[in-house]
Image 1: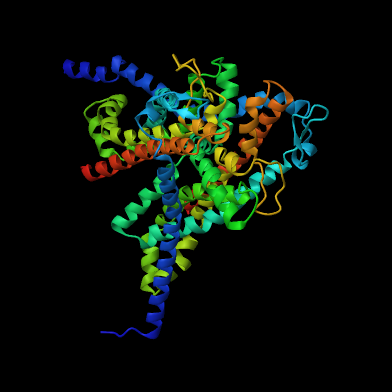
Image 2: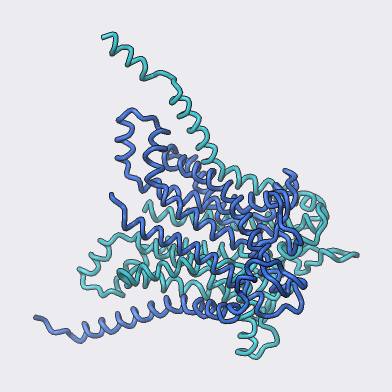
Length: 306
Length: 289
C-alpha cells in the first residue's frame, strides 16, 4: 500500500529527466521560432541600412518612375529604378514564357503518363537540373548562349533579354515541374477513375478533370517560378549585358534590380546615399518576393483544404 | 469481343499524340542541360587535373590552380553546417513533435516558406547589415557562413521535418507507455529512425551552399587572396565566386580556365545531389515499416 503511494508520488516528481525535458522543449521552441526571427531580422537590418536614404533623398516619383539610375553622378545623382524594374520584368516574363509550357508539359508527362523506372529517372533528372548553381547558369549565358545568339540571329551582342530569359526559364523550370507534379499527384485517383468509367480518354481525363482540379496548385507553381526569376541574381548579372535600358525587343541588353545591387554594393562607401539606395532596392525586392510567396502559399493551401 | 470503332481509333491516335508531345517537352527540358554539361566537359576537361585542384592561382589567376577557392568553399560550407544543422533540426523537432496546430505554427511555416523565397542578394544585404557591420564580424568566413546558414535553413528544416514525420506515431506511443519522457522518446526512438533522412537533407544543403555566390560576395568571400584563411575571422576565396571572377573580371583569361572552374563546381554539386538521391533510394528500399 505505502509502496504504491510512494510510486504514485514519484510520477509527478520533478526529477532530472523532468528538467531535461523542459529544457529541451525550450531549446527546440527557440529553433522553431528562429525562422520568424530571421525574417523579421532581415527586414529590420536592411531597413536600418536603407533608412537614411528613405528619410532624406528618397523621392517616390523619381524612384519608381524615373528610368535614370545615375547614383555615381557628381553633380546630380538620380535614383530611378524604372529601367531596372523593366529589366527584371522583361527577363522574368520571357523566362515564364519559356518555363510554363515546358514545366507543365513535363509535370503532366511525369505525373500522368510515365510509370515505374522512367518516372523515377525523370524525377531524379529534374531534381539534378534544379541543383545547378546560378553562377554556373550565368557562365553558360556568358560563354555558350552569347556566341550562339550572335551567330543564330546575326545581332551584335548576345547578352540580352533573350539570353537571360532562356537561362532563367531553364533555371525555374525544374522547380516549377516538381511543384506542378505534386499538385497533379494530389488530385485523388477516384476523380480519374470516375472520368474513365464515363468513357473519357486519357487526354480528356487530363484536360477536363485533372488540370481543372489541380488549377490552384499549378498557379502556385507558376507564382513560385516568378518569385525565383524575380530574385535571381548571378545569372541575370552575367547574361543580361547589364546595361540600363528599357527594352523594346528581346535583343536589347537590360539590367535587373538584383544585379544592380550585386554589381554596385562593393564599390560604395558605407552609409553613402548610393549605398543606402541599394538597400532601399533590397527592401523593395524583399516586399515583392514576400507578397509573391505569401500568395503562392495561400493559393496552394486553398487546394489542400478544398 | 468488340471491334474498335472509328471514334476509338481516333481517340487512341489523339492520346498517342499527346503522350508524345508531353514526353517531348520533358526531353526538351533535359536536353539543353545535357548539351551544356557536355560542353563544359569538352572545353574544361583539359585543364582539370591534380595540379589544377591543388595549386594556387598564378599570373593574375590566368594560370595555376584553384586550391584556395576549393578550400574556401569547404570552410564556408562546414561553418554554415555547424550553425544551420543544429538550428534546423531543433526547429524541425519543434514543428514535428511539439507544435500545436494553431495560428502560431502557421506563422512559423509561412516564415520558413518566405525565408526560402527571399532573393539571395537580399540575404547578402542582410549579412552585410547584421553580421559584417552590426555584430562586427567584418567581412569574414563567419559572416558569410552565417548568411549562408540562414539562407539554407528552410532546406534543412523541411527535410528533417519530413523524415521525423515519416516515423510512425505508434513508435512514440509505445515509448511513452514505457514511461519515457518526451525528450527520451525523441532521442532514443524518433531521431535514430529519422537520422538517414536528415542526412540526405544535410547533403543537399552542402550542395546548395557550395554553389551560392551572391550571399558571400560582400560578407566574406574575396576575388583574390595571396594567403589561405587562418581562422573564421579571415576572408576567403570561394569556388562559386572564383567562377564569376575568372569569367567576368579578368582580362586575357585563357578560355579553358573558367570552363574548368565551372566543371569542378558543377561536379561537386551534382556529386552531392547524387549521393543524397542514392541514399534516399537505398533507405526507401530498406524501410521496415
